[in-house]
Image 1 (tube, protein in one colour):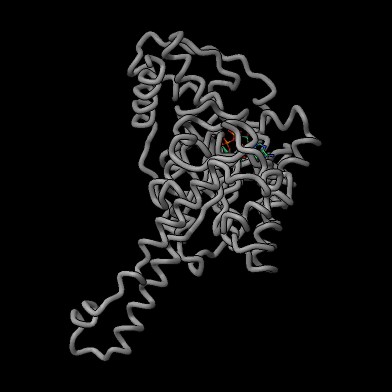
Image 2: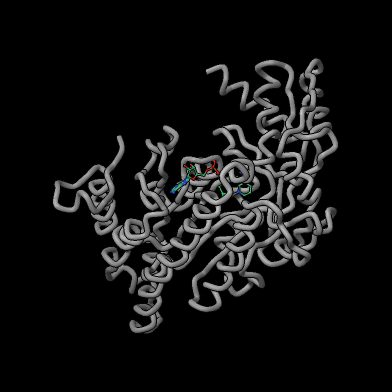
Length: 384
Ligand code: NAD
């Protein structure tokens, strides 16, 4: 069921989302550590002064209270990353504390496990209202037009990508939702950037509208951090590979499509040339590291633009070979389209040593392990 925007319903009976929220607050009130405060605490701490015991427990209860009350908004939760990120966040922070929002309907898993609401990030008033109303403390903003689609509608893509970010930064500045994750991309690099082991700090002259918007976004994020103290955090994602939802129109989408076609047709026609190496990452690694960055000590972060994230680098031919280990008859053909030029302007491999040092970026999946899991999970999914 779609829930109407919050403003339009303020005079009516509580909605499903509001009832859910009220019930959660009620549960929390009845369970507060402060209510469990009693004489047994003083008995357990015999020998210490009453004052010190009180201060110790008051501080623990306060910090527990603060931790329990972290409320997270995920914007763009119905997309490739959002569908998996929401579920991972709900496992950590509790279903009721992670609000999924998008302009399109979510997966069943998201809808059935916690709150979901239609919310357009381009509508500043509604966004700010949402942050205040649900006492949001952290935002993950995933809404964007991706590289392939952006080249078809350059001006619109620029407007959407920049407004989605600027509304989030400004709403964060004006509310308590001071901690923001917004993903950048390897698209911030361009044809003049060193293509191999691309350093964190280097020449950046992107020549796609998507890349230009991501580079501008990184600069604005850092600006809001320095100028207004907004806790902006970001990574330059490589191409992300997952099986739960379809990819959203990027240049690295071939590395997901290939698995579905391998199982369904035993062949795939690739829109990039066979030797186009690009950095990629399995979604589980991307999600784990995204949350790791958000949980990292802010004082240890030497960068407030976006951290390089390397993952694994391979080209379509190498990926096809990895698939052939499981499906020996699988065949691949190549018919490069407009996305070839985009891929040619991006790095083939990335140096992410700064992220490793600052917040322990670490990946688990190599090409073979990722291929095995993708084939297994897609087979399961298609047989249902
Ligand atoms: P996606 O296209 O699958 O999902 C984006 C979601 O945002 C969609 O569900 C869409 O409905 C929603 N959205 C669009 N406009 C909106 C609006 N006005 N208000 C609210 N929601 C809106 O994209 P994704 O692959 O999940 O990527 C998420 C973010 O990660 C994007 O910023 C993207 O640039 C970045 N990124 C992704 C990859 C990748 O390989 N997937 C790589 C690098 C960076």
